[in-house]
Amino acid sequence: MLNEVEYLRLLTLKVRIIVEQPWWIVRRYLQRKFFKIAKQEFDSEYETYWREGESKPKNIGTPILYRKLFPKAGILLVHGYLAAPEEVRPLADYLYKQGYTVYVPRLRGHGTSPDDLALRTWEDWLHSVERGYMILANSARDVVLGGVSMGAGL
View 1 (tube, rainbow, N blue to C red):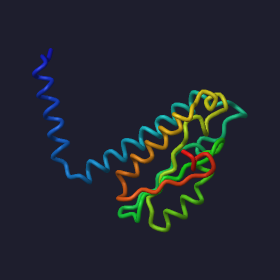
View 2 (cartoon, helix red, strand yellow):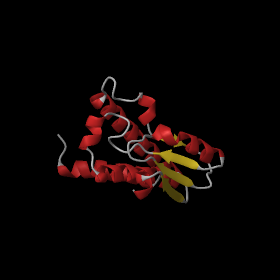
View 3 (spheres, one colour):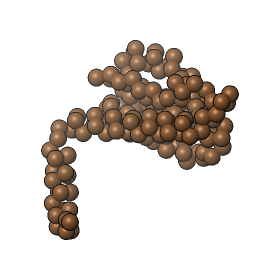
View 4 (cartoon, rainbow, N blue to C red):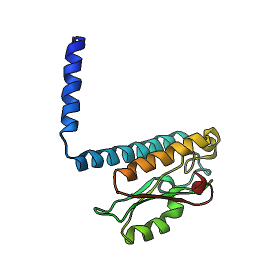
């Protein structure tokens, strides 16, 4: 069993490894980690709340991330109330082709079922947007936020 000092040595070693990494590796790791969390969150909620005849196909609610190696900027594109990421994909496709990294988050409760949406608050939706900002802040120098309807308000 490890004592307190041994835990500190392990922690110090892990911090040192992270600090010594080039900045772009750390940013890429954070971008991928936050996107993975968003996808896992959706997968879990879709599985939990999927309802025959009520839920849309899974691809409708899956978060979208289009990455450019050297983007003009990152664009966070937020869908509206009762919508889902797939519904703004045409705009995301266009922006990506213009040279931008684009992330379309899935606001919690959307793209699953009415039962899931009924449990969510605006704070849940804001958290989805903030996570999206973290993904883009680690992908591009500048980040632009845009949205449709309620998504623009967040």
